[in-house]
Image (cartoon, rainbow, N blue to C red; front, side, top):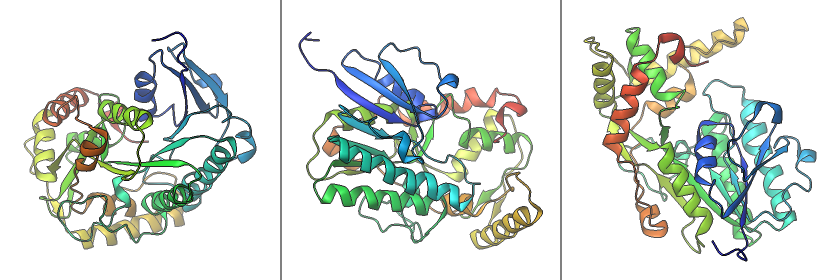
Length: 339
């Protein structure tokens, strides 16, 4: 790199998460200076020399004041990564936290914000391939509803010309360090408790965490004038095919039963109500959010990302998914259970 060339300064929220770790690797090159927002800096250790730590919390606006000076691009990847949290927590983090961050970014003259949303913001009442133009969810609270609200807020700043905004909606993020989705399916399959919600032909969109991190870097570097919302999926797989792959990997011969969507959503409401009434902090077997997300056909493609960002996944869908399933299948039960 030319010694006189100015390094781009990237500010990342959610750096301690699954995607955050992949982002730090992606931005570890010499041409970037990286600042990460961490609530507890003592618990964070980076192997990369170009990463500096800022103590703060997106839900507390006073901790952000002055922290975005000289930042070129903000990557907002922080979020509530569970389907079992209070409505107030989802709202505080996804809506309140995003508002605090973007207001400070605009005030500081940040050029671009890249917001990591989710394909869950789309309305999946109708099956078929979903695009960036598909209708948005009618859910008002929880994970999907507050992510949608955060998207709309960021786009309002973009439309007023206050900041360049890029919205990235990944499907289910997976990789060898995944601690949620595939590990939970492997866990339930090993215990012979796995069930499919809804039609077994419903498809799940997947994106490898390293592919996603590379896409985010591309979005940070490229000037985007028109299309600024990107649905991201390396590939789609039906629940039938996915559970068969996982059953084979753990050498289970048990057929995976299906629960009709309407029965599952009713049961989830009952289980959630009982958990809240009893004061239990343990996640119910079924939650409303999980049924809404996994009980419908969520198939999506990365067509716009290919056309605008020239995004072509380095890790193929089939190779990546098979490899990760085999790695996770080797874990012990106590290493798989979602907290």
